[in-house]
Image 1 (cartoon, rainbow, N blue to C red):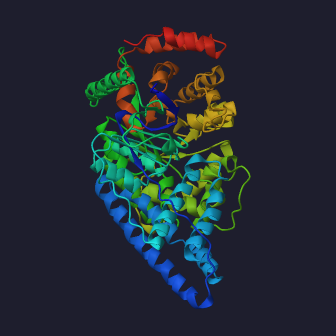
Image 2: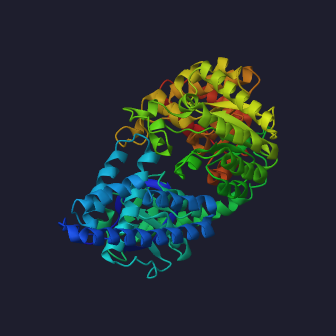
Image 3: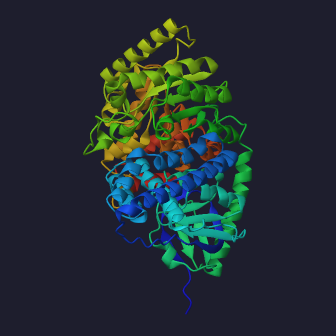
Length: 578
């Protein structure tokens, strides 16, 4: 009997539903054999390596042009990261060293890359752990050129195709859009992989992290990709297909319905208006934010500027980048978070005295790193200050855990202002400065912090993770990551009440702000600003416009009487949106 509805659980990388046929993009199967190279042939082997690297460089530059054409210059920096890996002297020197010892080029590339990739597995942060796949992508291109194999083509795809692959490069993802691929599934990757980020931008439904999926499918097998729930259904039954067709039609209908809210204010039925902002990491995302009705950039993650380069960004580069965003968003506010990177992640930018940390997630990162290296911090602050004359820019310090960090950061900010004055460069002296509340210690003393800053923004991703002692990307404990836990709700109330008591606005830029399930709760708690991925803005706005402030406050009062998650879930189910 034919088996139907084989349901597989992966990671929801890009939302949406796709129904189609499997197109397996075969992985390059390189059989790497170690060969001894005699002294007279070593020069020839080094020349082969050089030729393969040059060909790979040309391919990557073509990828860069394609990304730039389809998504803009900042997404093209993804290809920059690949070029940086290709040109990394440390990797290249190690490969050449092995060849000089009498090893063939293919095996040298394989062994060196294998050794380097192991170091990525030790990194706690998912985003940086995903960079291992960029290294492997570049290595495959070099290997393909060493072996004289041609690059695979997506020309055989048709409009019903859903790609299933071990992994995809960002350039592959862009090519999919051009040949009308409905969706894709990969064995490796996470929500923060470059391919996932490109898929989200192009609005291609995607599920990643499905181990061995390429062995479980056949060419042209019927498949459904549910990028909302992170599900893949192989060989679905007629009933399942019909259900998902209805889901797809509802999805399209809802999308059109939500477009009506784009230019409407985010105001409750009894007149309370809130700010709905977008979280972005480069200027190209501003267009999507405005297209979805954002009236602020509630979080500009500046880390992308550091990770797409091999040297520290200059003051001028910071200025140009932030000015572009400020001008595009006028007259709305743009909150720039100063860099939130760990020291061990950017040692390649010239700080080689930084050693590997046993727990970098709680180590030298974010504001701690900035205070240890004030010159790096000051270059960013000067760029932000100069850009402030072009729009409504605000500064936000990440991972604050004590008052002294705010005072030290502000001292460096004042030094930056003094230097700009001496240099005759214009800036806004009254620029607002806020902090992210994402560490439990900061949440507990938020009443004191609120008196020291102009605004607060709650980073729920880390705040919940640290408070609940749960790694949210660890499959074994991720179910314990609970935004509606009584402890979290009380922490949020304390932060918001503390900010308001000091006469300060408080926003939220964690994922909780963009989840419609929590919108009424956050309204009832008194949140002033919600910031989220651009695509979530219409959904949240629709809910805000459908309820009253009084209703949301009553919901919160009921939730605070609950003592466990079961009671909270029952209360939420009883709450009705109009």
